[in-house]
Structure formats: structure tokens, C-alpha cells
Image 1 (cartoon, rainbow over the protein chains, first blue to last red):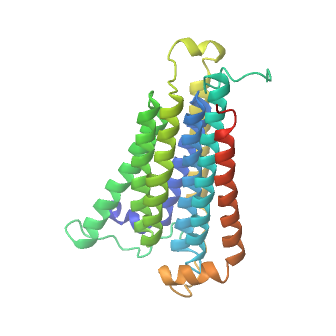
Image 2: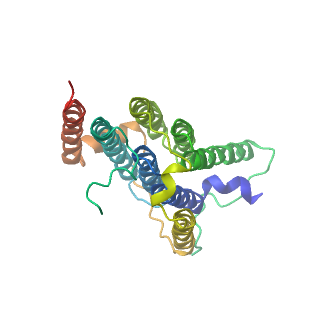
Length: 108
Length: 184
């Protein structure tokens, strides 16, 4: 029953990480509000963390490095979410919307 | 050397303790994928945030399977407990709803399929890369429990630890300043 041994294989975790990353990229392009894009960016960061944890479990000689790096990614993600939400509130106060189609003052 | 690293390589029986662990792992992965699909495809943003929380809960389980209960706890605390709630508050304050028909005028019809193909292409490329590479396994040195993490965090990685504290402080101050500007 090879299916039940998946949790002991490195490739399972790499595939999970790749799936999360591609979900994040897809959502980043499809979403039309700033909050939706923020949610998608969290997926990209989570994919990176999953890869670090997987390599830490199976390959790394020092099994603390990957966990510490994942902790740093979590801290950066929390800071990023706080900054993004406050920027979004400031934008909403000025424009009364956070739809990305309406935020086109620069005519990009 | 085999391309796929499995430790241990032997598969367990279905009706054994290890087989039960394998079933729980499959359920955890299902939780991760279901949460990710909901978060990316839901029309209402509140549902997307709920999907995000579900996905990160499953991801905490995945971290547990990667022999790191500490990181699983941190995942629950920081992502499920803080980041999801923060985004939910942001949704409540700005009340954004994705318009279904009206907002589509500026957007090409190709955006959805194009985004899907880009995501699928990246997934395929990274999966092939992950499965085909000959990973080299190094012998373990030292433990991976909370004590080892704490010692490494305050000795080997102390500079990064200090820097991340400053980054978090700046983020807090910056968030307060940004959100307060223009308030009557």
C-alpha cells in the first residue's frame, strides 16, 4: 500500500508546495480586489515554507535551519499582511473602493 | 541512488498504526487542497478567507508530519489566529465585493484561462523538477526539538533574529501611521 507511505516521501511535500504556489499565482492574476491578491500572496509564502520544511526533514544535515527559516517567513508574512491591510484601508478612505480596476490613476 | 527520497521506504499495512497515520496524512492533504481551492475560487471574499484558514490549519498538520510540532503550533497561532483574522477585519472595514458582471469591462476574457494555464505550467515544471532531481541525503547532526531551535535562534541566527524584530516593529508603526492618515 504505497499510498499510505506518502507522508514519508520528500516528493509528496514538494508536490504540495508546487500546488500551493500555482494556486497563489492563479489567484494573483484572477482576483480583482486587493484583498484577494493578498490572500493569494499568502499561498505563495506558504508554498516556500512547505518546501523549506520538507528539505529540512529529509535532506538537511542540521534539522533546525529549515524550521528557523520558516519562522522568519512567518514573521515577514505577518508584517506584510499588516502593512497591506493598512495600505488598503488608506486606499479605501481616498477612493471608496479597493477594486483593482478602479485604481488606475496612473493609466498604466 | 533513487530519485524519490522516502524514509523509511517500506510501505505500511492498511490496518496498522502506520497505516492509520498514512490515512490521517491523506485527510490532512485533502484539507490543504480543499482550503486552497475555496480560497482562490470563491466569489465572496469572506469565504475566501475561511478557505485560507482551513488551508493553513491543514498545513499545520503537514508541518506536524514533517516532525516539527513547534512550527505546527506557530502556524496555528500566526496564520490561522492572526493573519486570517486580520484579513477578515480588513474585509469588514472596506466591504469589498467582487462585481460579477459590471466590473468585467476592462478585463479581457482570456484572463481566467491564461491565469489557469500559467499556474498549471508552473505546477508541472516544479513537480517534474522535484521528482526528477537526484536529491542528496546528508547524515543528521543534532536534534530538531524546541530546545535545539531556541539555541540556534539565539546563537547562530541571532543577527537575523534581531533584524526580524526591528522589521516587525517598523511594520507595526508603519501600519498605525498608514491607517491613521487622513482620519477625521
